[in-house]
Length: 543
Image 1 (cartoon, one colour):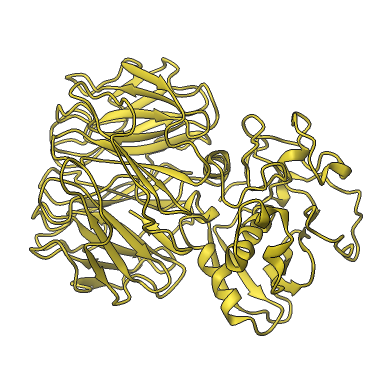
Image 2 (image 1 turned 180 degrees about the horizontal axis):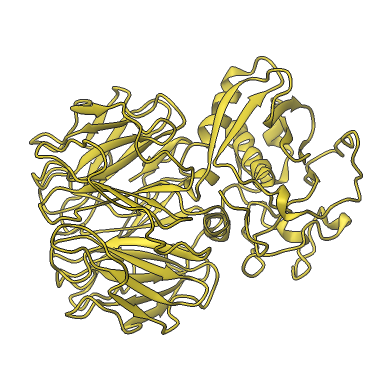
């Protein structure tokens, strides 16, 4: 993986002693406490970051930390990152070594080795501002503090110490501890002391994605598992493998788990990731477990009732693992009604497709374009959607620096030959924290583009025209819907009217809000909300 660019977000300091709630950390041997600036080469370039424990015991608390760094509140759900290992440290261990200390938490980076100190004291939640401000219990306090420290592991300094910070917060004594910034000052960042946030902010998430590359994960698009025309919510516990389904009912409401499977699935290693797609062409959404470390794949096909019973097909053959910059993209590229797997390298732009077989199995690469050089610049990202309405999934490239756009439409064979349409109109690039969610918002059978800034609340919709092209915003609104810290926005047709709706899920509390698309594909505010927590445990992920 290439070195990270110098525009990177909140970059690396050599020593952080974290808190008004932190006692001074002992100065690491051979460093200077005044040496607070970084060299770009120190920033991490590996995807798999090994983690180990220097201190024995505390099995329960260690489990909390490990789960939090795998779950939906974690840094790795935002970017091309994976924390692996988690055993006792061997002599000469590299990566991240964690020591359980007392009365402080801190992180020190020495190049290939990062030392993290965390406090597991019984009363830790009773006196830390980050915990008392959010009324956190002991477990939540330990998790929030560790998420902050692992932000330092990734190279982020204290947000409130930026030179453009308008705030005066506890912990400002040392002055700026970084040299580069991403986006405007973020009061809600978990890396700051002003808000004492207990979860990643929108800027934390989007900035991490831009810095470390796109995550190997599903787009935030909800799916229909039971063939009733309404999308369902699937919650997966990454540690236990438990699955929970909350089915939409009525005009787009959810009432909690309608089905639960306690049989562990897709949970045996840190490298296993859950994807969704209709792989056997029966219009019900199936599950794909992909091991990004080994390349193994497992498919669990939805039955007639839209539930799951375990692996129906698997392959241990390595696929999409030759480079740690590869990403799995799900779509029906050849238009046969079965969704396929596209392995995309976001550094080289190379593409490899494994088309689904008749029963939703995969045999290996059927088509490839190794010299594609498609959408592989630093600020460019690939999105999948059927933009021209021909029932084949296309590839959309967006440049978040310039706002330039391009589409490579899948041909009749489900292959790609390069850009078929481009536009240099400068769209969805006015702020660094903007992102895109693809969906059919006006119900015309062609996927549209939703430009969403989770920090400011700015929202722009560009509807695909008859040719599957885009000309700029057709509708826009600026509001605070789904902008609070810890909120994530998903899309899907929850009321079976043919138009994709918005579902906002709060990752810590598990609360949900639904905004239904109007007949013209616009959004006017919350139509339904639930105050009941769902999918809110540390290691759970909403798909």
